[in-house]
Length: 605
Image 1 (tube, rainbow, N blue to C red):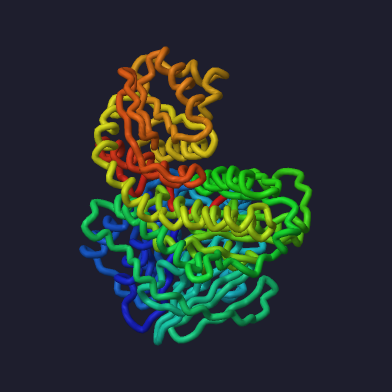
Image 2 (image 1 turned 90 degrees about the vertical axis):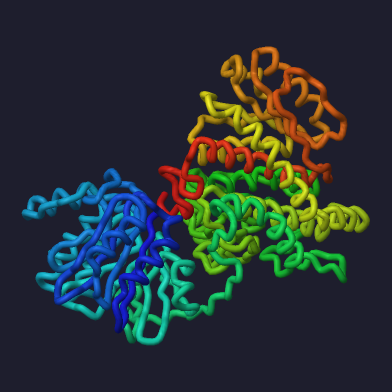
């Protein structure tokens, strides 16, 4: 989960490297560094902490090379400090790396026997010293090929050479890597987002590919050393930039962009004239789908949990959900009549991408629901349904989660109608209700002041619990995850009916318990479970859409969201749990956009 940038140019590159690293900080912000070639020497500058610290170093001691590589790190091997920061350089080669070298200890021992000295605790330095050793007899390209054959694991690499001042070599296995094109300048980057400010012409390396960049040319090779051609994509001009505007941080901006996210999805997928959902070209005919398998990680997994309820309610299709990191290690029985749906914000999530690769190898049909249509997961899927949320910079996903749920709901409706699982009247009624969702989200955001008051209850809390039933259970899980991610408070999400089977032991006097209780078929049962908590001293924070005033002296805070169709309630109830996590983190002075130990795009397994 690190970010890589490389630039070959006819002018100094350090400023553009710094600007690109700022865009890549969502991938890692433990440390940062760059290396350029100046006067036939590798000029390396590194720091622990954020890119702004690296920028200060460069201000005092500029680096004027026309070719260079940069890196932001999310630590895997070795603590975050200057020695472990990338690039990792010898006298003649410098390397930046995203991924994990699984056999680094074994390779390190072999190199140490030959007399190699290691300066860091990282797995990456093994790559640097292997290439350095190979350069004694081989040219740069051959030395990289020779090194790659010895590596096990996943990686994206950017490499420069003291004695070859014109080239950057990039290589990919598992972790994403893109190439950008411009006049008198070419680029290497972890993703297109980092390159968009410099170019809109992009190619993507596939697993096993290697590229050689100069300021005037780009060459691609496959793992058999054969030259290959790559398609050049023209990136869309995204009007939704990474500017915070008048907001304190990206997360608050992205929470309040959610009415727009919903509107974009509706405009994209619903034909108002035909009163139909314009999703076509299914990889399997809807009536022939035997089972849907939903696969994701973290927040994306929670959107899959919500979707399972929808598919079971509206269709006759069997549904399974799987955490991507577990999926490919199970003894799976693939079926060509199953549709495997992969959900990912970035489209680069390593575990999800690996699960997709396994499905492709077994020749089953795949669909991806992603926010980045140029991503690896999107490109490798048979079918792509974008969520149209625009760039999401905050590490803790908000509008992308909402977009994932909306697209999954739209897909569910379309499949239900296509399979005749619901009749025309029900289909159009559900569509009509769905069109009012952006306005309902906008109204829900007005509860922010009430949520701010609730947030104060968490300042001295040791932890908290989120409870829900049915559609609200996945939202309870997401609420707990958001609070953990942003405020570093322990939080657990549970099905409310499970309290008496163990979690009730955690309830003690004053523990904040968030009860998510829409007026649905579970409402009365949820209230009963709430009473179990009250009887043991829990402090209830109650979120509902029930119009009746619930007077209970044991409810510390009550928040009401607009009433919508039960099927849509999880989408609306997402808003208060996002706002709660945000305001608790704000009160605790946490870094809201960049929570500790986390990265936006999880590109290691």
